[in-house]
Image (cartoon, rainbow, N blue to C red; front, top):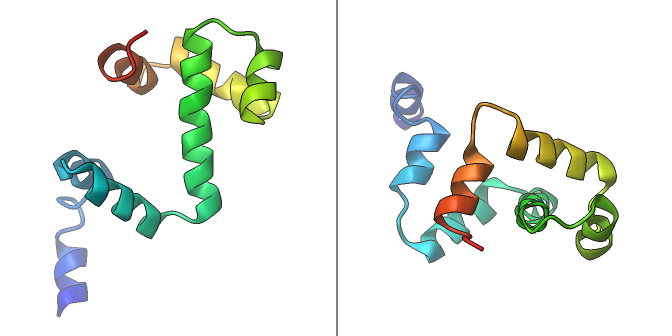
Length: 99
């Protein structure tokens, strides 16, 4: 029955809503570690580090040396940070990771 209820409520249990409802940093960390592999979690952290360094206007080669991210990853993060309509990276920089 629980599985059926989850399926029935899938539109209400979208990941963004679940994440937005978690206010405690430890619970958030526990949840992220539950739903990601160690490599996926490392990749998320790496991308956050990349966007911070892009914001500080470091070169791609400097960012790659610091984060071990490929230039492909850095380019993708840069595109989403600067050009894409979503604005998630921009919001995080402005509201959470201020200079």
